[in-house]
Every structure is written in C-alpha cells, then in structure tokens.
Image (cartoon, rainbow, N blue to C red; front, top):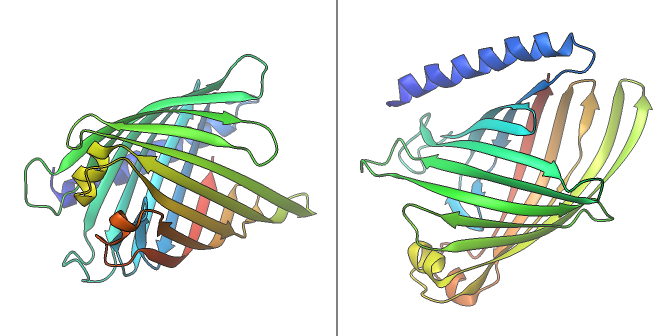
Length: 255
C-alpha cells in the first residue's frame, strides 16, 4: 500500500472511531472508547536508538472494547534528515488484550505489533512482534513486558519500568499534573545481533521521562522532557549517540 493510500486509510479509521466514539459516549456505560493523539517530538528515539535526530510528527488512533484495543501509530519526518520529509516513514498496527487477575492488583496484557516502513525500498521492509506483560497496581506501578520478534529478528527484548503520577484538580473540568516514568531493558543475543551486530545478551536502554499534563474534560495537552541512554558500552558504540535528549508535545482527545 503506497503512502497516499495509507493516508486515506488512516483518515478513514480516524473518522470511524470518531463517529462510533461519539455514539458510545451517549450510553450510560459505553462498551467502546477511543483516543486520538497528535504528538510532536524534537527527535525520534525507539528503545534507545536515535531513528531520526530531527523533528517528527507522530499521530495515532486507538479504539477499545471488551478488553481489546486496536491501534494505528505513525511517524512522519518533518525534515529531510532521512530524505523522507513529509512522508510516513513508519506505520505500526497493534492489537492488544488487557485485563486483571481476578480482584488482585495484578494486571496483564498480550498482543501483536506489525511494523511497516513504507519509505524503505525493500519489499520485506516490515517485521512483527508479539508481546506479553504484567503490571502491578501498587506504589510506582511497576511493570515487565517481553517482546519477541517473529519475523525479521530472531530475538527478545524485555523491559522493566515504573511510573508515578500526581494530579491537582483546579476545577471539576480542569486539572494539571506531573507524570514521571523510568524503564530499563535487556535483550537476547539474537536481538542485539540483528539490530547492533553485537552477538551477546546485553543490557539495553535506560529511559526516563517527565511530563506535565493539562487536562480539560476529554482533551489533554502534555509537554514532556525525555532522555535515553544505552547501558551497554558495546551497543552504545554502534550508535551515532549513546545518550539522547528530546522534547515532546502531545495533544490527546478521548471519546
């Protein structure tokens, strides 16, 4: 599917979610919810890898029902850093199922993500990961998620993380808060060899972020500052920069 067709398809999905989301809001207990996010980032960093060191725009749509969530996320390069200015350089399709273990504090999620790279010339410029994770509804909200590539890379990536949010209500319809998050990961030798040419199991990225969400009913605006560094010197030496810092601004609307 070419970029223009993908753009029309994504726009159709956005309108579909918008219409169904509005209908769901009219119910007392809606079974369907939807979200649209529009993010600007001063650079694109994925698992510690600086994919694009200049500005990007990242729209996403998601719809949830009965524990299932389907989403489409995209990256559009805003400069000609990678020779793809104004184009979709990546489109990810994901399907997730999440729930909790009875009445306990333990939550779980399983799913699949398909990564598509439209601007790469090769016909096999895509890959797919499956994942499974556990989260805990306790202070700092710790979680662990395993990702396994079932296509291009023969390996696994495991991420551990924590987060904490503070919120102050200014009025019944308006609040402001602070979101803190931190994660670290290690990956198998197959994963590291496929991405970095390092055929060993190694610690990968440590990533930290702080955001300040401004919430007004179903709309939010969140500026954030983020940093990521590769904990393994061997992996860090394969990248243009081992440590990266970036600013992001996220607009979100829920239905």
